[in-house]
Length: 129
Image (cartoon, rainbow, N blue to C red; front, side, top):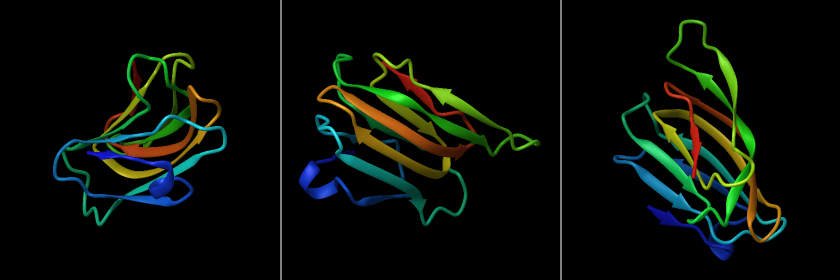
C-alpha cells in the first residue's frame, strides 16, 4: 500500500508494478491542477488474482468525478463500456485483475478528483463510497 504525496508523486508517471497481493494507492487532499498519471501493471506476464484500489479519502468528503473505459479482456467479443463514478461521493476505484491501466487523475478543488482513462481487465472496475 502506498500513500501518495504531492512532492514525490504528483506530475509524474506512476508505473505500478505487478502486485503480489491487493494494493491501495491513497491520494493526498486534492489541489486544483494537481495531477497523477497511473500506468501498468509493469512486468505483468498475465492478469493475476490481485486488485489495485485508488482511494481519494474516507467519509465521502473527497471523491471522484469522471469515468473510465473498461475493456473486457475475458469476453469473446472483447467489448468495451464506460464505467461512471456517481459524481458526488465515490471515493474508491477498484480494479480487479488489471491487465493494462492508463488513468489520469486531476484535482478540481479541495474535495474533488476528476478521473479519466481506461482499464483493461477480466472484471469491470468499480467506483464505490
